[in-house]
Structure formats: C-alpha cells, structure tokens
Image (cartoon, rainbow, N blue to C red; front, side, top):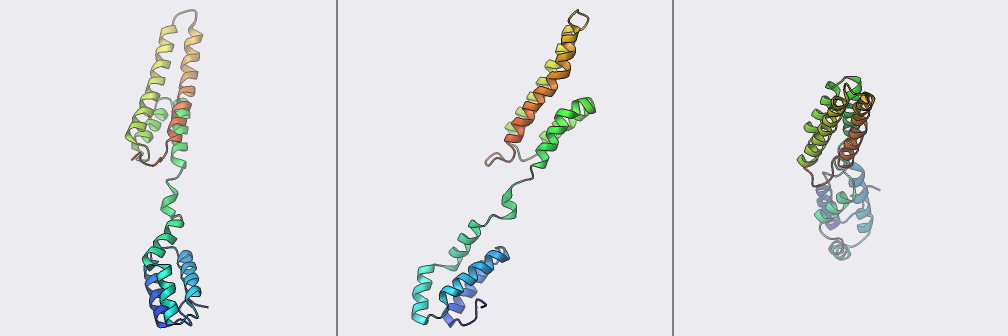
Length: 179
C-alpha cells in the first residue's frame, strides 16, 4: 500500500511534512521511513492520529534521525588509492626513475589536503632525511676498502626509510580533525 492511501487528513498532512523533510535522503531511506510511519498511522481515527503523531515527534526530527543512521556516499571518506600510489612513487620512484620518481612522491605528499600540514611536513622531512643520510653514506665510504658498505647504505636505506615514511602517511590518511 502506498503511504498516502487510506489515511485521514491529519495523517496525510503529517506524511507530506515528513516527505518534505526527507527530500535530501536516499530514495530507499525516504520510502522506508514514509511507509513505516504510514503503516503506524493507517486506520487510526483523528484523535488517535494526533496522539500517535505527538509520540512520533516532529517530521524534521524523524528525518534527521533516519538520515544520520544512513551513511552518505560523501561520508565514506576519500579513496585509499591516493596514499597507495604515493607510497609506490615514493619508494619505487627512487629506483625506477632515479630522483624524479621520488620527487613526484614528495609532490604528492605536499599536494594532498587529506593529511594535516604537520603530517605532510613530517613525511617530507623524514623522506629527505633518509635520502640525505644514504647519500652521505656513499660519500663517506667512497674510495675506502669498505666502499661496499656505502653502496649498501645508498641502495637499502631509501627503500627501508621510505617504507616507514609511506606507512606513517597511510595510517594518517584522512583522519578526522587533521585538515
């Protein structure tokens, strides 16, 4: 049965107000709430309808409660793809497109508004520190008998350090109160 069928004038008016209050809700929520309330009011006389409407409360309150219980598409948060792509650019970019790939990862960190400025700054500074230490490592051991240690530091430290930086950033992606 449709919500407005077999309703007295008071119930019909109440349901119209409720329908107007639910206009911003999803069609599924709107239909479900309207049908439930209509079923509650159907078959009541005018006095019983007034009593039941008082018990139910204002249509705007019912609509607000119904929409609050329904997750909105915008409420699902930003895509998790961005921090994953940033992680790949930051970590693999250093090796696949030396320096430029890593710089692209840093630009992605700085460009996103889904991290607080503090998190972006910490991520960028930590990544730069890792690269600086690995570069110093190769120069310190250059020309010595332990040059292999410098090469290992230069090869492994950017990978390990940027894995930690990327993990730090992914865990803080779009946390509430960070904007």
